[in-house]
Image 1: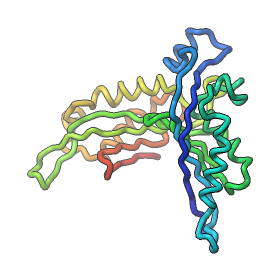
Image 2: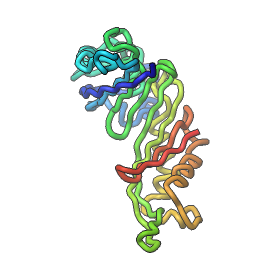
Image 3: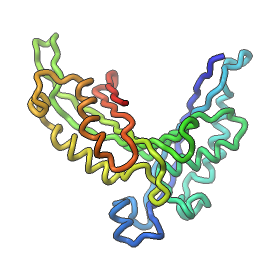
Image 4: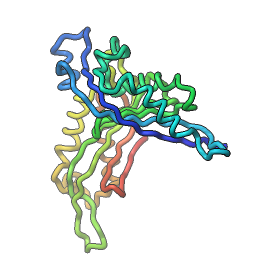
Length: 257
């Protein structure tokens, strides 16, 4: 029988600080930026837990949602409304980055046999940053996704007589790779932000992209591929996994290799 994926979302609040005790203040600040500020800062995290399994022919469910919710809430009791560096044992020798927190939550959830087969864990630090850990990639690898935004003119609407439209787009840039032991990150977010600002946001925001790119017609598909090409060889570490361009709530474009 085919496997079905079931995802449950639960929110919790916690504080953390990015800090490597083996580094001096200047290096910590250069690598982690404001995330290194003492004593730390808080987030309302959103955790998505995906389990896989066959649909039970008696219940019509992969797993009882009440049981899944109960198990996740029990696991999160250790983390909710705590400072992850100071109040939990998991980050004495690891930095509580989004990637590392997702990995720790996977390890805690994996021991809970009541939820069946764990397929993926996605942790949102906020609306602009989330990390994925999956069964297929293993716990030493994660994907981190960062959201950016820009407004530009680029797509024509034939029904309106050839007028060209401006869009405010959400740009999601996903990078996959090993979780670095020293930084706890797949890629340097500070450096990734600089790269996207330089290669995409600054040249595109507020512009007519036909003029910027020197072509007559710029579609969403073309733009997603163009953004990929501008970023792929310069990602600080890890590998560019996906570029997702959300034009409206009903329309999005993705490019990946």
